[in-house]
Length: 188
Length: 214
Image 1: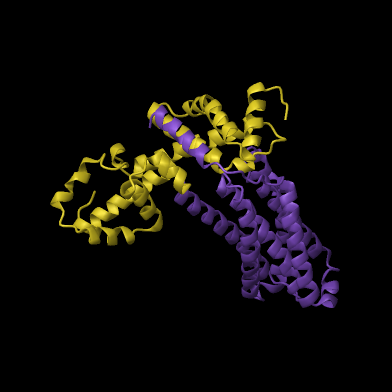
Image 2: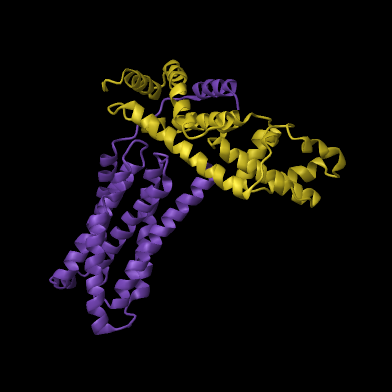
């Protein structure tokens, strides 16, 4: 659709091609829209690290809902609505978690958490750990398996599971808390 | 989280990208769902309701006004939910069913007032009404939510609330065909409360689902 927005029209054409399976068009699109997404996200999120996490979340959402883009309509409002919505969701989520939970930024990916090295002091066998992981709620179990057992990065785990980065972080944090309580009786 | 991570994410998304089937326009999807529901309800009415008794009941203009409000609210709420399930549709779509909802509740409120004078707090068939509206809302809601969630809505609570209003209104409309006796104040009050409960259940479900996946 021609709207007079040259970038938007080109992105719309790339997205239409990507919907039909053109991976080259899809990669070009994602690289081209990245600065625009960052500008929308950074207007709401000041901290660069957090803004980049939200930007990744927007890219994952674009990927998940790309079948909802209608090539007869302008592309930019579709993208802007997704970016703004996810940025606002992230603001709400951070406000909630800052009030209710304590995060260690290094605890999500394998071995980044110094506490992970405590295993030598813990009288836990592999079987006990396996059983404790199997007992976790499904969402927490999936996060632990992807991030801790298989050692994927947050972005890789997000692509594989279809869950947002924030959801994976919350679930792995809760899983570690549950495992520690069950295996050692210790509160995180 | 660095720029390199973001570039790796783009590469992973590209490598994983498969062709996708575009969603049909939301108006068309709403017409398909409403058409299927209309056929099912018409069949049920022809097979199971007492049409002679219904003809007599429909001579009461107050009932007909109230039913028109219910049906239009159901249709407009479903249409609005299909539009709002897409990222780039205006939030103003949420206002679409409000005028007919006000019309329905005004008609129902007036009928409640009239019946309260004649029946007082008599229970009538309130429990049966409650079971019918909830029972009919489950299959209607199941099919509607399946279609709405194909769009992976970004504001699922708003979409579910409108969807819940749509199915509860259509269920309440259908109830009138299987309620072959005069209603009491309590029946009408129960209907109003059950519609509210279905809407709350739908939005609560959407909230729970959103919190688990985001």
